[in-house]
Length: 339
Image (cartoon, rainbow, N blue to C red; front, side, top):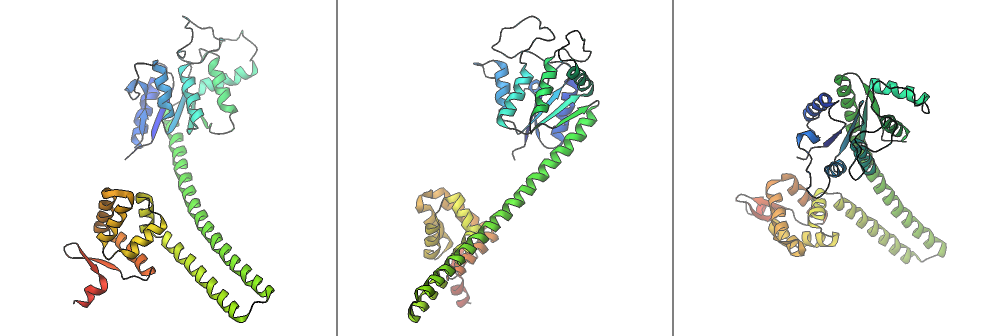
């Protein structure tokens, strides 16, 4: 089963103990932590090392940025200097990883050392003052990153920390909330699908009423009126029948896995005198022997699939089918007659 991939981004030497604890915490949740020091990043020989990090960031499901007192190494492709002044601007690898996550709109969680965040407040009041010596950061660029994070209109939850337990508790709550939100969205999508179906039914009834009203206004004969009513009743009944078919799980399986159109599916159901006959018809419709085997295996092993199959047969006015002992097939009525 695929696990959510959590990319941990930070400088290493000042935060290695936090990174190690994050590794264990993420694994304890059943997720897959991605940390460069563990060899989780596949480095390509034809590109700079940091470019592989950005590519891995884009493939992650969740991005965690931890901001401490070090800004980190400069990105590749730039002129390297032995040392950079405190106020000199440049992009670090960690900053570029964050930019990659933002570009892909991955869920981002930002954790900032409490001392660093306190000095950030001092920085905001003294941006133009270059005579201040900051005790907890090695570059003004750290403040620039925090400023950029906080300025974003969304996807920028921030939490400060002194101890790792504070990070663990906050992330656990955040990810539990994210999971709950996804479940709620799924429920809302199902409700919208139901509402959409109801609106569709209402529009058909409205169309029928419109035809009746037009007929009354034009003064049609009694015979023509009876004919119109019968025609509309038949049309509405057919629409209801199709709606019941397309809401059945057996139809959904054949549409999704077999790519069958509604007409192909209905013809295969009507023409089948056995389960294997239906499976062969599905295979002949361009899905091939592999799908034929998949259909037959599903019917053999799933009572739910057989019930859905026969529910549709009954809806179509056909005799249900049944698997007999030895996995042979017959018409249910024929089997009852032979007893």
